[in-house]
Length: 292
Image (cartoon, rainbow, N blue to C red):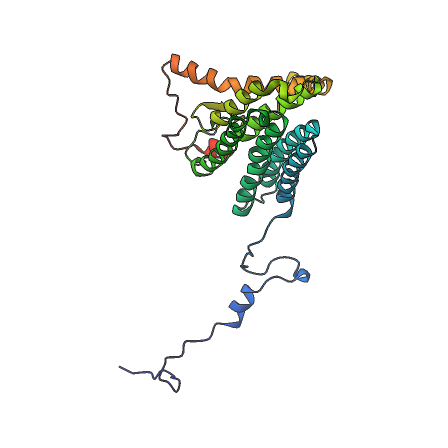
């Protein structure tokens, strides 16, 4: 049997064949003049600008709310928290529509939510009303802030096992709207925060504790915005916008009070019907559920 001598280096190490030039050419990054990609390319790990710009705007609103509370402009602080809610709802949808989801964006969104819906509402309600209660005031504010942090941490870890139709506990934006809406409503009615200390204490404590419960709150994630809807649905949306614009403090606070109580209604209804009250999934999702 014929033996073929391998070419060795001076150190007696076998020299492997060189990579063909054509293969190297296929790994290069495409030039703009190529008119398209040439072969497989290595994807750089970067940060998507568009969704993270909305997240940064939401973070700014949370910071702005804290500054306005320090300047005793509580109506501006409440409006800033509601603006952060709108921006927080947009950034995730923009990321999905433009296919720009990333792990960085998910972590950045959670940190922004902690400032806008955790620290900001707690500090605003403390400056507005709770500081007159001494340690009971700042303890209630801390319970709310800690509840928001625990709620966000649990959401990030349970996101793959929770029924997508429901939130596990009151979502932090809704809890922030409950607190900020009360402040905005009372400030609009010319009530001083020092006259409503215990009402503020109860609402703050309720929002903070409800965030860490297992009570299911409807998430609206099973609503498919890509499907056609009846004309009456568009008309109802117009009516909602008209109602909110007619008196934003009253309407928004009323809506979030109803939503903040709805979870307990769902909980006791499922308990009364003998249905499982846990929203932790025990079955594999179907392909239709994973589209959302």
